[in-house]
Length: 345
Image (cartoon, rainbow, N blue to C red):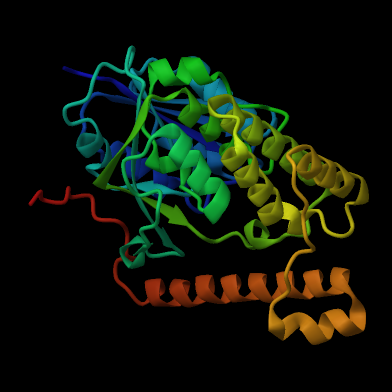
């Protein structure tokens, strides 16, 4: 049976990476697909690059800058597919990603099976991507998936998912109030609406690490408000599946994991986080500090320690990116993901 897949790409200031992302979508060996790019008011060359690839099956629209969730909702409103493939404008799909996930699948209009897959992380050269399996890389029931995320602080690149139209409609649109952790909240709804998660290990996507801000835990008040709302909604999703001692304990663990973003300077939000933990029947402890930052904390306090730690993390990421750029520049041509499908077996 032919299942049309809509590959949806929100793009903002993505001129450095968008070509590779679009080419990875176009190169899918699965033939029944459409690609929709929504430019979210970029001021660089993002829109002109997208329009260069425009065809009957690759649509490009633009809108005033409204945020990633709004861009995704715009793309979704135009999608005609039985399945939805979300793809950020700096990430990549392996050529046979969709083909592998769609083997022996049900009709996306009625299926509540959520299709998952493997992903690797890279800086510049996708051929050097590291695939690091963890507890989410397996078939799981929705409650077990959410419990694992909450208790083990794990993450899945949004590109791993292939979401049926049925699940997409059950979950509803992206929450446009959210910026930080918008994907965590959205896919919690998708998972909660599913009957089962089917993991396809040979289907692969590639997550590009290049943005130092993604490592920073010193974020704006507005971003922290988004984070608190997202965490509250995710906890609600878990407890809608099962309200028990273990789900409440997992929810407290989730709050503890993210406490660092609020502590100590976001005083009002921090109070709300503590109250939520108390309502769940637990308490939170102060975030732990690595031994190498203990002297700084003793001399200058937590705020300065947090700032220095973020500077160190961001400097390391920039160094990795620049080193990989150097190695890539020595390659002729610059290494990209192979456009040939991987042979089975």
